[in-house]
Amino acid sequence: MSKELCNLITQISKEKGIPKDSIIKLLESALTIAAKKKYSSNQNISLHIDPTTCSLQAFEIKRVVDQVVNKREEIALKDIQAAYPDKTVGDTIMIPISLEDFGRIAAQTAKQVLLQKVREIEKNVIYDELKDKIGQIVNITIIRREKGFYYGSLRNFEVMLAQNQTLINDNFKRDEVVKAYLVDIRKTSKGPQILLSRTCPEFVLGLLKLEVPEINDNIVVVKGIAREPSERTKIAVMSNDPSIDPVGACVGMKGTRIQSIVRELRGERIDIVAWSSDPRVYIARALTPASVNMVGVNEEEKTAMVVVNDDQLSIAIGKRGQNIKLASKLTGWDIDIISESEYSKIKIEDIEKA
Image (tube, rainbow, N blue to C red):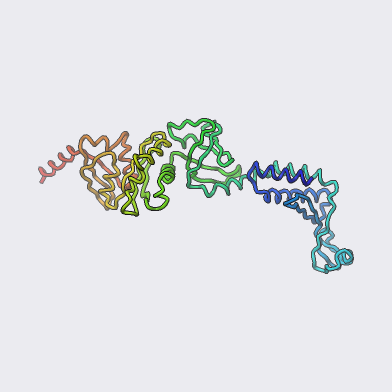
């Protein structure tokens, strides 16, 4: 039985990634119940599994008294003086129980318990293993796709990536290794619910951290990020070292760093701009790739009026207003844009009124 039990514990530990001591504790509890049923439900029994040999030892626990009132918990001093001469009233003794013929019952119980309970332990192991990965990029290996989800493997655990959290051009195949942002892990009655995303702004930020060591070293600081998944992302950065260009550090030599991120994002455009404490400068940079002529701001209402050349108006606004929308989100300012010709008309009208 000992060898069979050891093999069973080792196998489950390797397959499920569950520590052996957790399995042993679970089995000790279950086998104690089984022992009580076999030998006497009235006995106070403790069962121990040796972690090295997996041999079983069972004991009947009794409190030494002068006169027995509760046979389940007590034993008379006169009855144990010969075997336990050092014991006295008030002591607790552990009387060994013969486990003859218990091997078959133990084996059956062990298997039943593992089938019923090991999944519960596995849930906690998954949670403990991955909770420190929240807020990081993880690699998952795609297993299959069904009913709006990609099912994948993450450190031997099955996880789900909802298709509405993937990019428009994402079309993953079996065994493909995919990067995703681990948003959160929630404990539920069915096990840990692992939330993954490739559409959140933090995913782009995570990719940037993987490519730009200056960010991890806190030389370059990301001050803001705004994203329209599969379309465009705007990122504002600054440098704590005057000799380091924050935009250049993120783009990389000949654009190698940013190109790697763009490939992962299936061609999503990325604008990286230098952050500025001057809202006029910051807003003008946030409207990249458009060139800005003038920026007027109302600091109380946090609104801005931007003037651009006529040929830059559509670029500044962007397709479906995307560029101005992202610039507003990045800077935190409500931005309006007018062309140079419109601005000239307004000035003429103001002069005429005056």
